[in-house]
Amino acid sequence: MSLKKNIGQFPDAKRKTYFNTLSNYKNGQFQNLVLTPALAEGESMLKVLWNFFGKHPDTSPKFPIPFVKTALKDLSPHENVLVWFGHSSYFIQVNGLKFLIDPVFSGNASPIPGSVKAFAGTNYYQAADMPHIDVLLISHDHWDHLDYKTIQQLKEKVNKVVCGLGVAQHFEYWGWDKTKLIEKNWYERVDIAEGFSITLTPARHFSGRLFARNISLWTSFVLQTPTKKIFLGGDSGYGPHFKDIGEQFGPFDLAILECGQYNAKWPYIHSLPDEIIKEVQELKASNFMPVHHSKFKLAQHPWYEPLQQVSLLAETNHIPITLPKIGEKVNLDHLENTWPKWWEQG
Image 1 (cartoon, rainbow, N blue to C red):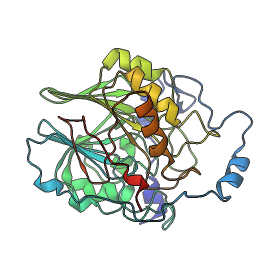
Image 2 (tube, rainbow, N blue to C red; image 1 turned 90 degrees about the vertical axis):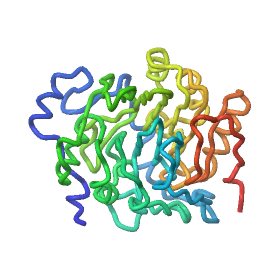
Image 3 (cartoon, rainbow, N blue to C red; image 1 turned 180 degrees about the vertical axis):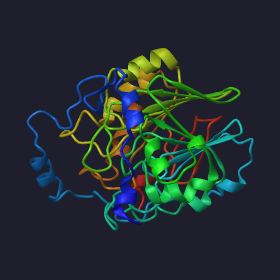
Image 4 (cartoon, rainbow, N blue to C red; image 1 turned 30 degrees about the vertical axis):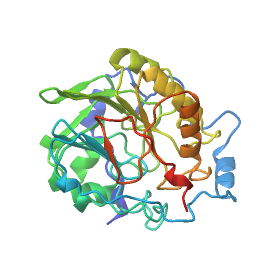
């Protein structure tokens, strides 16, 4: 696998001509709805990198992360379930259709082999374990969300891909059938089947697989099914878009929100635990599930801190929270579950 192939491909001239007509695209880059510096005021990338490679306790677990073996290919089509695979990868079967979100099964979240390796116990699930997928959703093109090796292994299993503008260019470069690819802008809707729709909604983040940033769009999704409404958050710092999405599309049965790889040095592009509680409230979500944790070390906080903090905050604010182990089935028809604090084991 060559690095060039892994990186993918920049949007072509036809795409860029169209992008230039859009209000959220300027000077060759997609834009956040509000000013979003990569780092907090007074921070520099040199200082951040120096600190990153310093000593920080418990950034990786001392024991293998526990997981549950679920035979995804043997699920009853009548089950409405969610199965999380660690970090931001998860599978949803609802009302008979199957969705896969940001799958990363290669064992690392970097273009450099052997770097940013998955924690022990988190890489049990592979592309071969996936059933046929009706819709593959990609929130943005960062390495920990768009994994070349995984994507190629899924090629024959996926009916449609839904992603933000520009991300489909990677799939085309990797040999995917163009008729399978649907790329849209924020607030555009895709009708999947009767009673099913996916609406792309804003996120506060950025994109890029090497040095060129923001040439493709990052997004969240509103998944509407005949019986459920689920918010798929992608990566996002806190911002006014959560309230706007809640008012326009809420209430939600479940919000899946990133919680992890945050730092006060980059507070605008990843949400801090207390901000996640505000996001749940503003989205008008009845329940939420934190993701973006417990598989890769991409920040300096203890690996268990995101779950420890957000679960305590949810309890304090009387907000239902969903906290499965990797591979454990979440019954979407009965979210009123009490989840053990598996991250405290070992």
